[in-house]
Image (cartoon, rainbow, N blue to C red; front, side, top):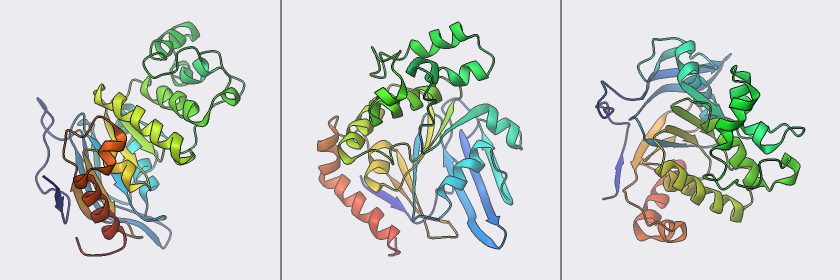
Length: 271
C-alpha cells in the first residue's frame, strides 16, 4: 500500500468526467539570470486532489507556485489549469495563491479581511461580507467576525487568510507554506483543521511546505524536489483513508515509513 515512484507518473490522471488533469505542468524551467531555479518540472493533479511539494530551501518551490498561478511566466514548458488556453490570464482566472504570510490588514475586522478579495473583485461590501461570513462557523471562526487581526492567535489568523483564499471562487488553491510561522502545537492543530476542510471540499490544491510530515498528512501525493535547480526526484503516493485522528495518523507504521523515505530522498539518497 505504500507506493513511491522514481519520477512523476507518465500517464495523465484524468479528471472524473473531464478530458484531462486539472493541473498540468510540462517540462517547466525557469531561471533568474544565470541562476537556474527550476529544470524540466513535470507534475499532474486530478480535480479534487491535493499535491504536496517538498524540497530543500532555494529549490524553487515558491517560484513554481507563482508560475502555476500565472503571476510568473516560465522560461520553458507549459502549464494548464482546468483546460485554460496557454498564457497567464487563464491561470490567474482559475487559481488563487495563498502566500506564506497571512497579510491581514490590521485596520480591518476578520470578516472584512476574509471578504477583501471579493470586494476588490467588484462585489459590494454587503455581498462580500455575507459570502465570507457564511463560512466563519464552518471554519471554526464563529464569534470572531469583528475581531481585529492583532486580537487573533496565529492559528486563527491563518484560518482567516485561508477563508479569504477559499471564498475567491477559484477552483485551484495554491498554498505556499501556509503554517510556516506557527508554533509546533498550533501548527499540528491547524493541520488537523485543514485536513477536515479539504476532505469536505471539492477544491484542487497544490501545497508547498518544508515540513515532510505536513505534506504527507495533508496530501494524496507528494513530489520531492532536488536541490537547485529543482527537479522532481520522486513522487510518493499517500494511501487513504488515514486515521481520523492526526496523532494516530502520523505515528502509524505506514506513515512513518513514508516520512523516512521522503527524508532520505531529500538527503539525496536513491529513491
